[in-house]
Image 1 (tube, rainbow, N blue to C red):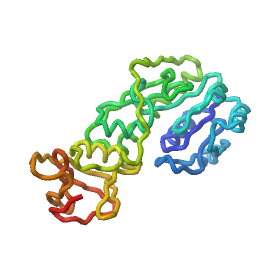
Image 2: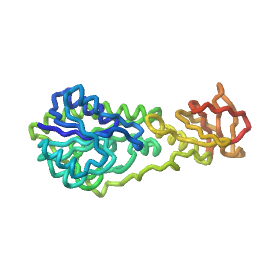
Image 3: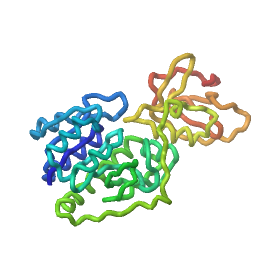
Image 4: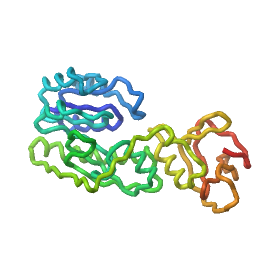
Length: 293
């Protein structure tokens, strides 16, 4: 089964390595040389060099040149894992078995952008690793494989990303031979159960101390590495918070944003309800009890 692989993030790299390791016949790789968009960007060219697989850098995967390249490769199937733009009909119609995409959410629920980030920010307890057959809409095609992933209170973006990778690699090992032997199952999505998450903007990462401490904690863990981090400004300087802890405090007459104490130099900030302790801030925040953020 001839495979064309499209991807450009850390997950793409792990998935491609798994496909190759279990004997998948990858005939070409399409990736980006650099990206200002993907914070988890990964150049896949080195995998191509190691395994003697042709690599093409492409800004527009839907260009006529790339469509013609893929046609000449005569793929039986195309895998598109970790690509920020939709594939258009000319590419979707090339491979007889279609194009398999990936979305780390419980499709048909939670289609759209930034699924790992939103799952943590919204304090979901369960998400999923979903492979599906791509069509002209985003994340709406028939499901090939889906496995649930539990989210615990200690998960952040890094640990959840790693859970998704581990689950997805096991799925690939199971469904790849089924695709080769044409004994796989396609499950249609129920559109009535679908919702679409919007694209996250820079303002979504700004900490507002009037939010509840739990909401701020979820924002921080959702935007932690490998993403860009939740931010706040103090005395004309911008700070990134990578880690924080919830601190119960229901005193009503303390204004949000006030530093009510320090614990091992970590400031404890009063929020709209309760408090948050900032345990990893970049650059180092020097502040005293009684000051305000």
